[in-house]
Length: 167
Image 1 (cartoon, rainbow, N blue to C red):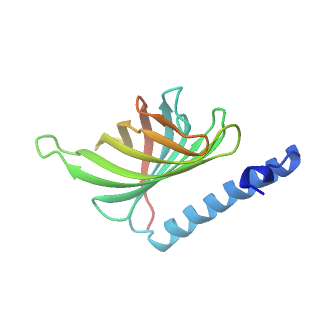
Image 2 (cartoon, rainbow, N blue to C red):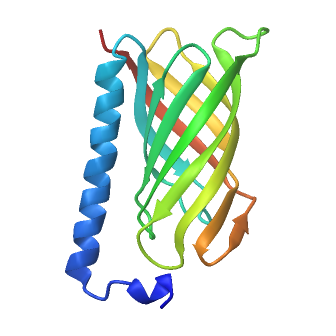
């Protein structure tokens, strides 16, 4: 018997799995934020290309230190999906508070043919000093591995986040 024979036909079961996955993600983020509360947090929205699995939704970024972070993205468009990225930041010394970054991670989709895949990310990130706002523009190619294999290279997004410290 193949793995794809285990698809759930009951919409209530699918909804329960989605809720449990979202709850697990929130619990994981809560653990990270309470365990390392002295570092910066950023939460906001991400507006991305229509062809991405993880494109438009909520973004939360947790900085482990000055140059490493983890970002979680909850996609609100169809298919509902969740992505997690590890990111490395490098300052652009000619402009204060401007960095370029790169990284990679994975995503899980909850409907359709884009159920699991990997993603890379590269972008530019700016932290305003006058107001606690963070702005980033990124390119995030995705490779879906389960249930179909698809590569999406033309995926760009803009994220606007509120930045805050938790001590």
